[in-house]
Image 1 (cartoon, rainbow, N blue to C red):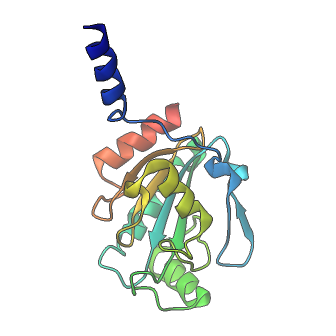
Image 2: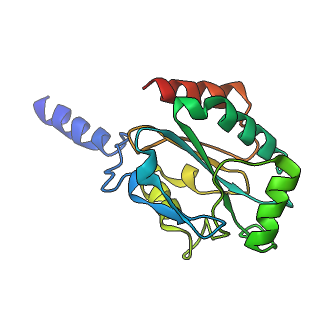
Length: 181
């Protein structure tokens, strides 16, 4: 009986969900802004960070408005939104200058925007590789406006697919919960 119990414990331990090792935290990464300046996540150590890959020619582009509203409402409570333009899904062909102008003209974006970069594949920015390594496949953008929420602890709190609006109750509830932690 004792042997069966030990075998069962060993067998089922392989099926249990393990926590990521997190050899690095999100705060150890930085991006280059659309203006060429450094966006250092160390500066946001006590913040909840929402990293979203964005594109101007996507069916979800109207989410820029929700992201701006979210940032405006919660920035005083230590929320940071960072938009990461990418052409990985062939919907952001413009230059950094074009992207900046589009965001400012159409959505009056005030939150930080990075330069255009890869978010998937071998050339993906190290932040996105880190998110996948520590949170799994759900952290990998499948399309534009994929959202990765980083908690105050510097770890991935959750991810949301493109179809989830930043104004959705589920998304906002998680932001509010993470802000309280």
